[in-house]
Length: 528
Image (cartoon, rainbow, N blue to C red; front, top):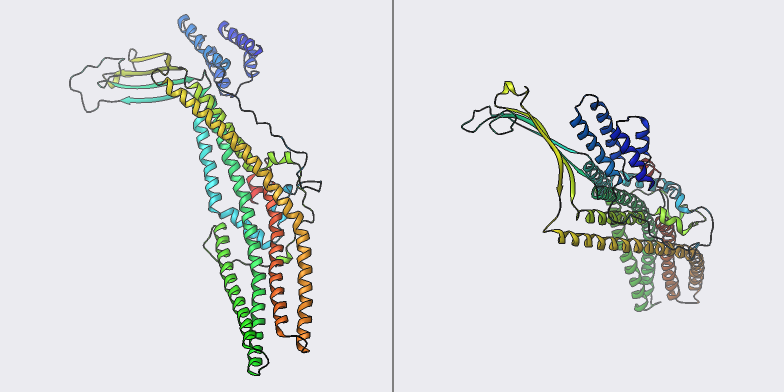
């Protein structure tokens, strides 16, 4: 009611010809979805004020009536529901979160991943990765689409002209009539008055789609950082395992040589030699497999870096990587404001909601201001003389008739799409919480696993020394040494895998929490 009162006062002041700043202030105080029509009101009011001083009474009345239209537009409602973020119930803390404090997600990625070589690789990926470039181009595309949608607020003004310079045959040419037999030039006006909010809802959808693409870009940045880090840690794991495999192969080759000599001396049987040779072949097979996996992982990482497959430099070992001693997850409610995939799904829901209003408004008649103005004359020399001008202005009304039912189905389709977007939004939140909990339980348990596996490796080192001493003293056979070596190499493999899993779990938690960026950050800070 207050809004309508403000419009009434503004309308009366324009109709009465009272031109002062109060009228403009009344219009600016109105709460509307877009300010473009306020600007048009002010412009029309200003032009009207100037023109009323020199126009005759009939023209004065026509211009005053025209100036009311934008004001009436401001009082018009927008069809369809307004977007409201769905309420999501969240726990006070994560299920397996035992630490309180600032979330690890508030750290910058270069503060979490302190290996200089890894930082260099990530920066290169942020500059050259093709998926990220495509996402950036997609943002630019929807920026343009958003501006295209905004231009529907502005009157559409076109022009055309004709010049029968090659002569005419028959026909007639009368001043003031834009026929093909006349020289003429004219401009046409077509301005849809957004009474039902179709244009406003379309702009809301376009802006939401743009924001969704921006969040998608952020999600790709975060996923890219995580993927590069995990691939790099995979390489470091393969390096350690390849070194273990080479040591195992060398040890088994030595054992095979000793066994052959013992077989010739009748000390051992052929069965013992076959067992040693089988272990040597197994170690050789592991070496070949790991060499293949190293090259394939380098190729995978090269693609993330946006370049052809090349060797990847490594400076620090897997065991030299620095990770935070504590990794607090923060509050679950923060996750809804930080994770880009959740924000992307939210903006997709907002766009779908706005399209319901656009589809509903399309079922109602469209009101437009139309007109044209120009000059026409059979002779070019008389084109600008009095009597050659022509023009008309008025209102146009167009609405659906036979296709009204199909437009109703369009609205139903838009409502169904909004339901899909809501389900996708809720599913994205569920997956986000699941990923955080998975990463938390991995970090919680990997510490005990690493401790146990280190103890296992130490015990097997001791067992190998004892077995070798017992064999050298003739107390036991070389089979005990064989078993101790096999168990030790397997344990060292498992330990290196656990060390890599610890690093990857921290990175996955960082990724699951939406770390590395905040909504107010600029693109330069994200790609540093």
